[in-house]
Amino acid sequence: MKTLILFSTRDGQTREIASYLASELKEMGIWADVVNLHRAEEPDWDSYDRVVIGASIRYGHYHSAFQEFVKKYATRFERNAERLLFR
Image 1 (cartoon, rainbow, N blue to C red):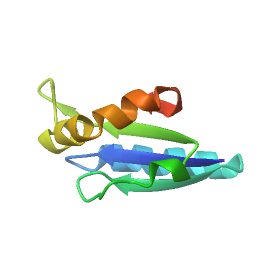
Image 2: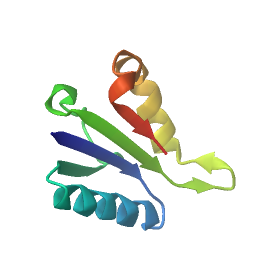
Image 3: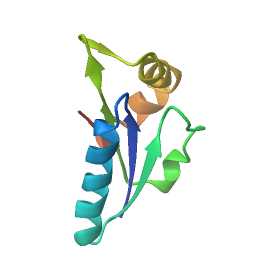
């Protein structure tokens, strides 16, 4: 089983959480790739059994790069909703 963990962070806390999640999954025998979506090209969605997306919120808003990423791949998320976990 393989998991893609995408994150958007401003101060690094969400990156820390994503890395922690990946290490916990590894202990359970689940491989995970951790990717900063600010620098990400389109993921090879079919290579993953599940996708986790984490994003920081500041003053009630997500980072604009996160919003753009979600809009750009919205149809992909809709087609694969059963594989997505949002936080």
